[in-house]
Image (cartoon, rainbow over all chains, first blue to last red):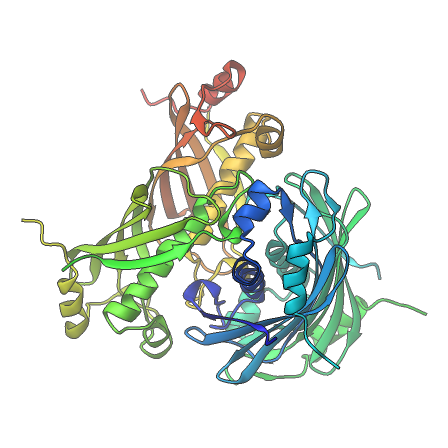
Length: 139
Length: 139
Length: 139
Length: 139
């Protein structure tokens, strides 16, 4: 299955005094890509996940390479691929590009967490099956 | 020389609906640690660097491990050590802890950039010497 | 002419530990509504305005009533109307609602500013004419 | 009693592409002033208030005048005065200045809210007495 795709625009609020995206704002965008992925690809909105099921998917690890600066008004094309699925975790790779110029690559590990106990918990079977359908086929 | 130290508190604005620090806010804190390090350790404020000298120190790469969640009201003790200095770059290691419990470790690469040309540029000699004094002695 | 319309969703990054929108995030949304209004209604992107023409439209005054809380996942319908146009300023009224429940009303005064001199400057005639077409007819 | 005082510095993360404070960041600072006021003046930390007592103090109304722009590196002196105390609300006036130049004046209405019911609730007597001691004497 191809990677999940999302698009956003670099707005004024994302830019620093040098006129380029301030990198903490990229992490807000990365979180948005993950949030939209769960909602659209898995049918699992963060409202449902957090408020009703009392689960969350915090990052345990995130490594990002910033290839080139993004500027006010740039349209960013994001992709998210699942690269590995564990019992209670998932490794994902997120990329952003603007008109085919790579801007960043982020590799992260999400963990499914029971918010009331703050302990990791296994993916529900149905969610896991959908996650697997987004796992890259890297034979 | 010991690592540079900084302290801040987890405020309401940093916390997500689970009551813990939302990870993009950690990157604002990491940027603050870098900004305070340049101002206090090198005597090089971001105002002087950006506005007068038209230089910046964007991140080229940043890998972060989140060891444990931080909560509203936690006091975070930050440290910054310089682990390698290149001609126009520096590798740094930033750690945060709360009452000796590790919260995150981030390893990043800063690059000194000429903001008008958006190209990397060598550290000025005096700044470089001070940076070196913060490099860890890892014999 | 009817007010300018925009829609966004309350994302995880907007919500506080009480699970509702943290009000500083509403002001990021308000800025987004203004930015999208200038781009779409006036054909004047912030990139063009700020980076090429070296102009900006900072708020001089902003009064906001928060009628009801917004929650993670809410879809917000925004409207922007121009209520008065001065030589170098514009008064606007921005409203947000969710499924017809009012969430906030903000009345602000924008001033067109020359970013290099930081002094106010008159609206260019063409821009002014388009702004006027969005002014409410309140006979 | 004099107004409550707080000081912070304009950091890189607060500034927009024009090199001045982006106004939504001022609202994060205003929230910080309120949070520090409750913690230090009333001995009522937001951790205790939100997490233990399940109460919050959202803004119901906030009117702000931005008198002059603030720049990267500026030290801002904040004051908070209580101008009126209702059964479940408080009106406050917050001012920021830099080296005696006024930067902003904000007048807001806080409401004490039961977070589980999302309804307003009366100030506890002890808290109310301390709030009153910060009310301006405007004979």
